[in-house]
Length: 81
Image (cartoon, rainbow, N blue to C red; front, side, top):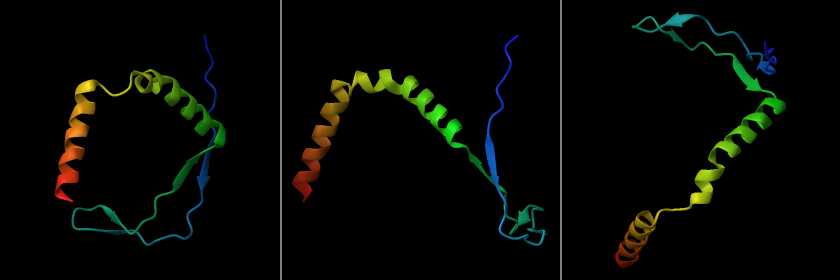
């Protein structure tokens, strides 16, 4: 069985405590949420995964019909200026 690696998450402590007040719907108002930051290792890994997933999409380029549409819209904008 594969073991899972623990994700390193850094939690930033809130600056100060806010009183627990609620709005008309019962939702907390003015309370600060704890900010959670991903560590550099995790950010780097996510970046690598995203690049590998979207690399092929970038290589495909812009389809001709979309490029034509952008060209025509650009020409319309130039005519309005």
